Each structure stands twice: as structure tokens, then as C-alpha cells.
Image 1 (cartoon, rainbow, N blue to C red):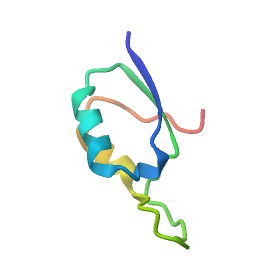
Image 2 (cartoon, rainbow, N blue to C red):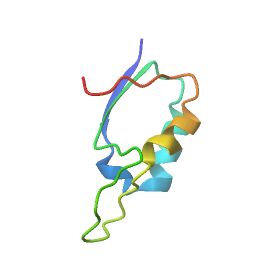
Image 3 (cartoon, one colour):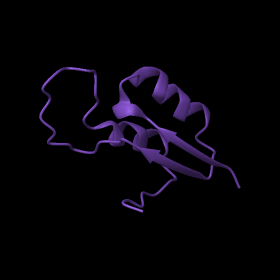
Image 4 (cartoon, helix red, strand yellow):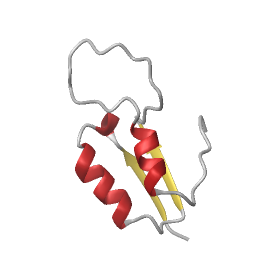
Length: 70
């Protein structure tokens, strides 16, 4: 079993992050922090946060399921 734990920092490095998930999509478990999904976050300063990064990752990790708030 392979596990990766990662703070994705709001998806600020969007393209390299998606390339990472494409490369490691056969990993069994991902534990992710600072991930947004249909966020209604008010952006005061544009730091590059991807407010729907979960959907982008989900499109790559099609065989995985989400368990949130653990």
C-alpha cells in the first residue's frame, strides 16, 4: 500500500500539482490539506489559490473516493 500526504497550499502551483497527481495516480491513498472544492472563499489578495482544485484533481484520480474532515 502506498500513501502520500501533501499540503497542496490551495493549488497555487496548479499545473505542476496536476502533473504530480498524473504521475502518482496509482498511489492507494492521498491525504490532502488546504484543498478547496466549490469554495465561496472571498479572495482579498490574489495569491493564485485555485478555489475548485478538488475537481481538477478528481478528474485525474478517477478511481479514488473522497473522505473528508477526518
